[in-house]
Length: 153
Image 1 (spheres, rainbow, N blue to C red):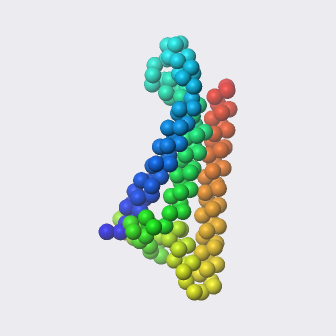
Image 2: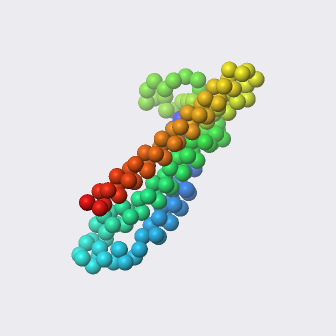
Image 3: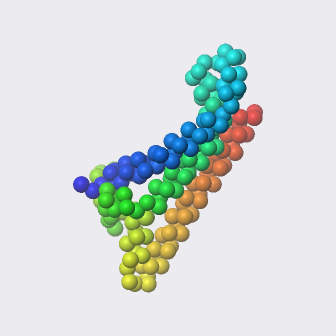
């Protein structure tokens, strides 16, 4: 059974290794002295993790999430096998259980067409996909800068 929900699950599983590995490496970069200092002044382990460790590793975690999103946005094969493709719009929550369109599969389908108009639409869709990934990247950098300012205050 093809569905948009299955496509989303396949892409989330595809993102997991990238996000997990970059998060692990980012958490390893936080100095142990910082953790020990927090525990030494009486903070609990929960508070140390939430207030010290995670904010210090936020940039690398955000980078991993952006890399995972970029990888998932460009994947076509998992969507062909799970969500198939449909030219119809999503009109409600119930449409998640049926075939649905995705930008990556649309690019693939239109690039194979012999008509110039579809090829131009494939290039335009590729441009939109790159712009969306760029906007997610810029948003994560703005969020990282915001968290750096709030850490200093």
